[in-house]
Length: 278
Image (cartoon, rainbow, N blue to C red; front, side, top):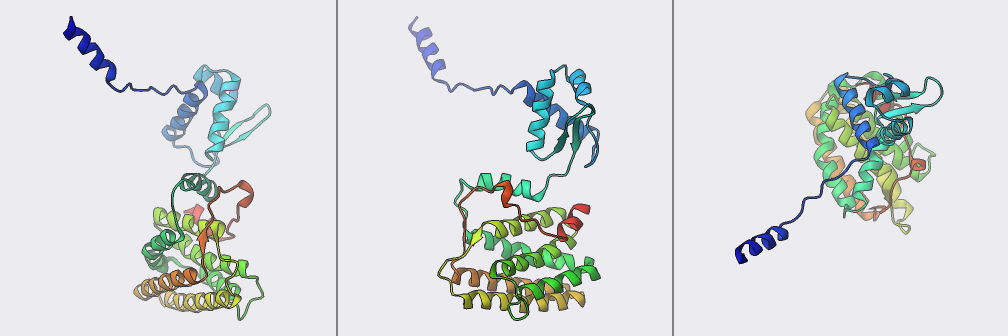
């Protein structure tokens, strides 16, 4: 008897497994995602009408709409209303991805040093890989970016110049055929645009020096890329990233510890369109 009691007590001490109960709408959302995968649907393809989804999943109109809303929040579909309303598959935007990532990073101790450590590893390979694929339109975009961020030839304000610095890297990213490397670098670039701030007491001369240094090395990179000199581009970009890290430290750059709002979206102009087309 004592043995049995001891056994029962020991069993009760074992950690209990908690089984997560998904809502009906969450289960339907998962099934719709599975349908998108199984049918190999692409951006622009329409999902079945709400009434058809109700029949297919034996669910109420409210459940279907809640499931579609969940997928819309995830950035996978766009929902329209009306008699023919329903969902259309869309490509998840970089802005939405950045928001989700920043929701995660908001609770992590990520510093600007971490961001630039990653850039020093990735940007040289990104630029080198882009060289064979750069078009004349790309070179025109690179040269335009250089002009805009050069304090000696531009009337842009300091913030606009810093954004143009990043646009230069976006053009290179859009030309790189490696989708994962391209995505990672574009994501970092968007974080730099939206989350990096500099100390209020940073002298304007430091911003000017940073802009001049960026414009000069960007010119060298562009020239080497025109000559299709892959190794020189890789070397120059490595030098650029090391130099940029030092400038940002002197300017007391830091990451803002905040969540990104929809209103914060500062989309890049042309490079993103090429990137999405790949």
